Image 1 (tube, rainbow, N blue to C red):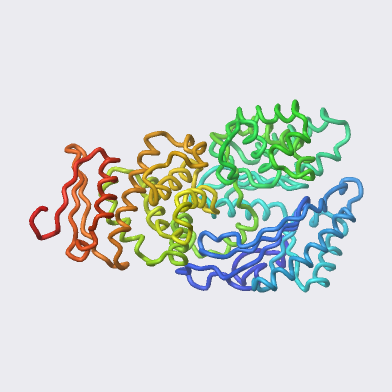
Image 2 (cartoon, rainbow, N blue to C red; image 1 turned 90 degrees about the horizontal axis):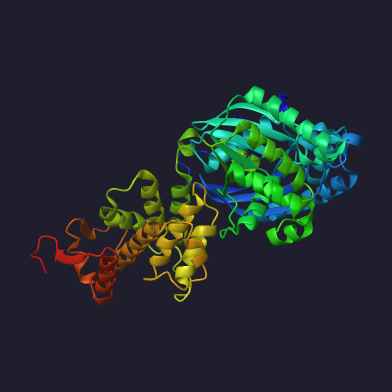
Length: 518
């Protein structure tokens, strides 16, 4: 690839500046990335936790720059005009948000079009911003790194579909391996002569060639791109799936086949409205579904996960020092939220240490959820008390948090709901509870009530609350209060401790450390 288009982090790459001056960075200065794709042009402004940046702003314009390129060799004139208008708007928005110069990255349509260089020059003249045109190998690598931002240490196959191309990249232990690019974008598939039969033969031949190069890839298949997300929305609608969060949504090979068939037998316009897919995107979905069905048939992945992270997030991950990459994105986001919104910053760690004796035998995956809940236990205090439990649940299940399966979102949401409420029945979210088992719901209740009680012993971030001691065989919950915390154990605190004990089906024992049992 042309060295001028190198996106490595040495000199700041397309950002023009280093984003993470120190490996110990916790916060990210606001930064804007524009992805000029074959089908859409999108601005994302990132802010928040360095390891788990939040979407401060996100806007997409469907321009279809790559439409008709197979015949003309040039960018779609109408799409080109719409894209330029959008990019001028994005530049002004970036200025008003304090992002510094936007980073603009263009993919298949611009790199393949005869007038691609002319378009880039026009953009630079209109906005003063250089467009970085990346090749297919680099597109695959950055998309894979975007997946690693959300799933650190993951292994599997990343499949990124755009309007004019589709890329595959292998990830293993947090590193990107083999990569391959193809012309299997739905805009290009529309232009194939010979109808469905010819298109099917072309897809089969291309996927077979990709498989020969990539070799066996039977682990997880990560799907990146708007057409895949649209298919996931349709799969959710077909299944009646209650949690409409695309990131980490899982599908099986059978679900892919069933949804592809569902597309064939269902009125497209009615389905589009029910699933919330735009008209421009829906026009591409049937061809994308044909590609996905062939990929799943050929590579036989263990499972399939939707990733909302791709090239834009990959550009950020590119610049992260390894020390920052190694952090847990969920815990980093929760730490950032606590520092920003909690009434006593740092008290979440005190709560975590205090309640962990209740969860001695849990594994590392559940332990990180308990830590996340403890960090978030006081960030929603501004909500009205009558609505606080539901606000907590809604925030946890729908927030932009990486490193969370849907079942984990519900567990975290239930724990935070119980931080403010003894019961979970009667909320508008009851249809989501079924995504976890009854045992898991009960464990979330215990966690929430433990945090609810610990919050009553509110001191400072370095406080010594005493100890909780759980004797599961005897069914005894022992509270050993520190001298510092003992005066806080009033009537309300006693009631909350009794509620926690009831959830454990336990008797209580209360004493002050270094004093006789009460």
